[in-house]
Length: 111
Ligand code: SF4
Ligand code: SF4
Image (tube, rainbow, N blue to C red; front, side, top):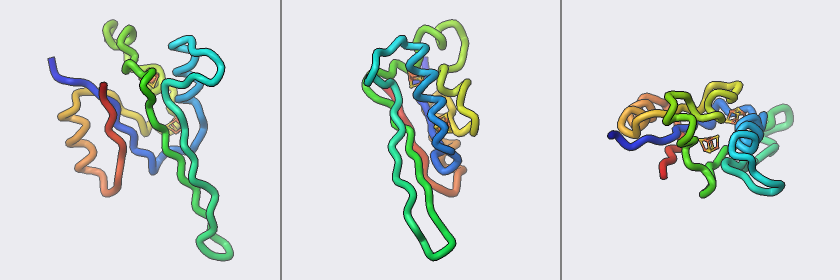
């Protein structure tokens, strides 16, 4: 079977934290434990009227790619709940192709 992974096009991430929360609920994680954690590099000022915001959701070692859900043919919880549709689950080869098509950087994660 092809190796699976998560691809996160973080340029579209709005920093909404839904991935963190949905993962905590799905995996029943305790306070302070995360399967995915939002790193924040914001805000920083470009010029007088322009501010830049960057959020980078990073899966942790507690992420098992939602093996229970995907074994039932469902998408990972974080992918389902991402409001910006910037998280993708699938075969690593397919995700790598998708990354190549993007004109920007993304994160590819697997276990
Ligand atoms: S794939 Fe599942 S375990 Fe991994 S970060 Fe997303 S919700 Fe959490
Ligand atoms: S759910 Fe999607 S948009 Fe929200 S913080 Fe996570 S990756 Fe970003």
